[in-house]
Amino acid sequence: MTDQFIPIGVAIALTAIVLWKIFYNNFDMVINYAEKRREKDDISLIIKRNDEPTISINPHTVLPLASTMKIIIAIVFARQVSDNIIDENAWIPKEELLKFYMEGTDGGAHKQWVRANSDKDQYTLKEIAIGMIAYSSNANTEFLMNYLGLEAINLLPASLHMKSHTPIFPIVSSLYIPSYIETKEKVTDKNDLLKRLEGMSREEYIDCSLEIHEHLAANEQRGYMNEVKLDVEFQKIWSDRLPAASAQDYLTLMQVINRRGTFDDKMQRCIEEILGYALYIHPANRKWIEHGGMKGGSTLFVFTHASYTTDKEGNQTEVVFLANNLNVLNSRKLQRNFNSFLLHLLTNKEFRKKISS
Image 1 (cartoon, one colour):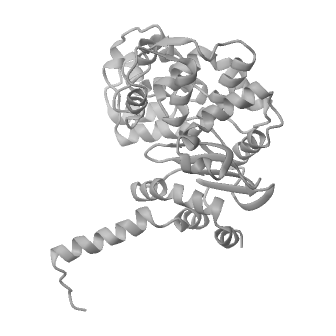
Image 2 (cartoon, helix red, strand yellow; image 1 turned 120 degrees about the horizontal axis):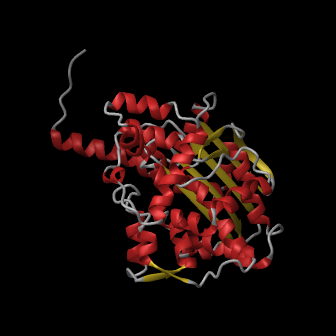
Image 3 (cartoon, helix red, strand yellow; image 1 turned 30 degrees about the vertical axis):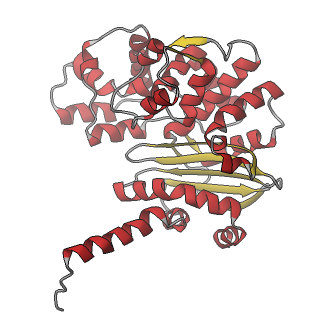
């Protein structure tokens, strides 16, 4: 075998073509990845169209949801608006949100939302909820957890028969748990700290996050807040302990919203305004989608998505995708190609036939 030499300019061009195909023109990779890992316990994909299953891979496997769990908070928000418990037009000073903002941990989501809203001094509750869903602001999410009440939030999944859902707890606060334990228990060795975190029960882990959340809500500056441990090992523990559920649970939830038959009109309208904001901000989508909404999420290791759509012809489609234990390449490929996959699924009859065969 002889070595082949490729001039550097050609090599760069060839690499660019390969990366373009991998990252921008490979809508098949989503279904291929799910099929490839079907036997693993770290992938789920369910698609239904007009109540008929298109594909179902590991529907009952419980996996971390990342930001997709924010759908639950949006529904509780809408319920409290409908029940006149909260006023969606109430103004909240931006300082109340900044209590829960952690620089460099949300991919710039909160700052993007702030820029989109002209960096105002105060925001309505509705704007904050839209920021949580459309921009995935973690600061807005944790503020709403505090404002709506975690008890009310955690009652919702059971009321909708989402039997696999694990407790929802403050996800910003939980980022501080490693430094909280290190400071409180004077753990000086990184490996010892990792073992301590890995050995924590779910109850202890959530209790820690709740205590930290109370400190943040009260705007208390504690010593452990001087550092957020973002080493990969700590991020993996944080990611694995995020609220989790099965794809089947979220598929059922998407159907409930899409069918418009469970919630009262005011609540349904509020849910659709929040979950559908990112869809309807694009005029092209309004031409063929009657109503719809979605939320996705990701960490270094997780990619998730849940959506519902009803097109102008009355076709109803629900999609839930949950993936864990991703490497950097697969995570990036999913993020780059998922929208293309979803668009083909919703608009291309031949593609639907292909993946359901």
